[in-house]
Image 1 (cartoon, rainbow, N blue to C red):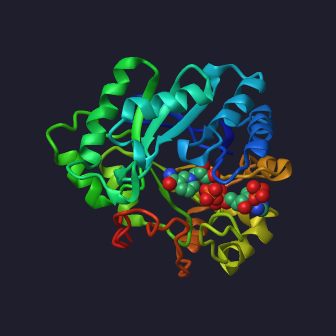
Image 2 (image 1 turned 90 degrees about the vertical axis):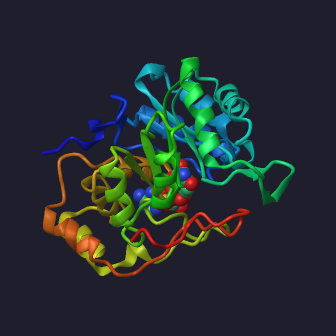
Image 3 (image 1 turned 30 degrees about the horizontal axis):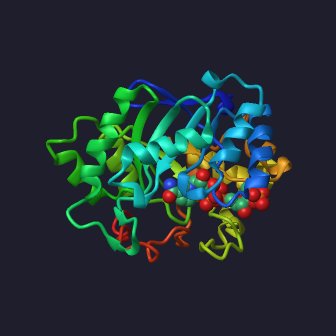
Length: 303
Ligand SMILES: NC(=O)c1ccc[n+]([C@@H]2O[C@H](COP(=O)([O-])OP(=O)(O)OC[C@H]3O[C@@H](n4cnc5c(N)ncnc54)[C@H](OP(=O)(O)O)[C@@H]3O)[C@@H](O)[C@H]2O)c1
């Protein structure tokens, strides 16, 4: 039976991303140090963070205090929107705060180049294609091993991939994926271009958070029935669905028992018809919206 906790996905640059990671968005700095350390001590080898989360210093402390050798850990972080014209500086800030020597995967967080002096404005004469030109240069520093994007829709990727300045196909597109936002068209498009997808908000997001919209995903009968018949939690069922779709998953938790539970994905599986029963769930919601950005980035046409 599959040992999912040691599963990796091979990226288009030949590197291997561990299939299960720990998310850290909305993990408070005082909590995230301990949760990252706990996760690494309990087998996780992939940590997802971002400059925008405001907790990279503590994420780095958790990584360093875990005792797990740096080279055995995959760390993803992301360029924040107001840093698109200053990619090298934005990268340097994350590298400095994390203080872990190098970054495994650096992503453009959103295809939105926000004016650093006015968050309601998009930069004139600049967009994510120019940002990607700068991202490509980062590889020469040796301080980042892989580069990719996040929240890119098909229209963004078509524009990027068709631009002559795009010499490197993004290794990863990190996007919102859960049974109530399955985005099959976008997932298929990425796979057809050799772009691996990491599923964020893979549990349906933080319930009760004032800054995102989670929905009643974990009360869906199809998920509850499978949880009961397999003796697993609804969260474990949803995570296994994500793995079975070929995506890496980065569930966030600051609760030790949940961090352990979310890693409890070895020795059992979902059969194709069970995966299909979850994929047939009809309810729809999106955790991450674009109303806080100066331009739209989600168009609802990737289903
Ligand atoms: N690229 C992007 O734009 C983007 C956007 C959103 C998210 N992300 C990344 O994806 C990660 C995951 O997404 P997310 O944070 O939106 O939400 P999520 O992982 O879908 O859900 C997190 C919520 O589920 C709870 N939880 C976790 N495991 C549980 C379990 N076994 N049983 C019951 N509840 C459980 C957590 O509570 P506790 O923590 O209280 O235990 C938290 O409230 C983020 O942390 C971030 O790293 C990236």
